[in-house]
Image 1: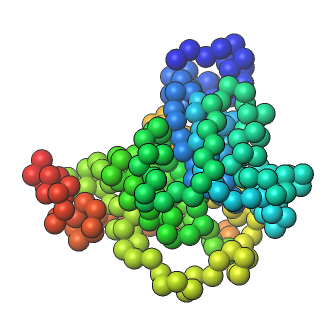
Image 2: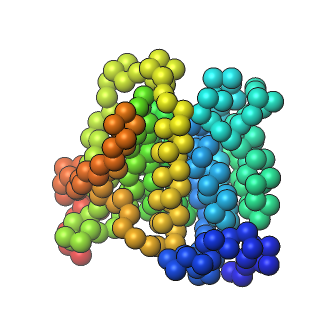
Image 3: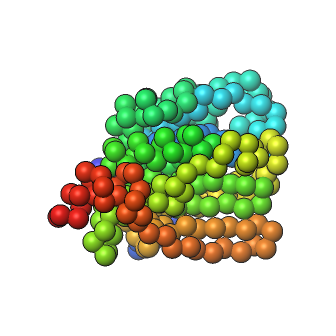
Length: 267
């Protein structure tokens, strides 16, 4: 997939990177990425993917822009109040980079509609703000064999990991699933929402930008990614830590008692 003269100048700082170069930029141009949520994490994530030259980006969000969003959701502006987030985000991305194809999904992703939506994309990035959606996305990506970069943010902390549980790890076992890391969602009401507890706006920008970096790394294929590793960010102490986690043989997706687990163990 050739780059135009405009694209060569636009992505010049990528093209001189040994780890990206022309071949890597062409991979970005040919990639199709679905971003779930155009909120605090999705806003910087979308902007950096568009600026990086990801050729096709899907935006899924059924929410409307509100005044309280503007403290952290930097893809929106005051005149956008009341408008659909997915539509506004798509228009902003096209203004940033006219070489993109941007698809709008004005809906909430569920276990029922996920297979049809995911089918058109190569990589999924989840910046949703609730456990129901996170589990639905992670399960759907497992069954669709789509790499998933998933992030979450609290008041002053955040996490990122990458999931490729449909592939084998170095030890021959499957890579871990989201349910290996978080077997069950916390009971309703035990984790306060952003509206209840607050969130540091700049922190969502940090987490979203790191998610974009991980998506780009997944597409281009350089360095060591976050499969089997959970990156934890503590904004109070400005501390970054990485926690390794592994496959749970009792998990319901690719555990030993599932068809996938039996196939993996026998292969």
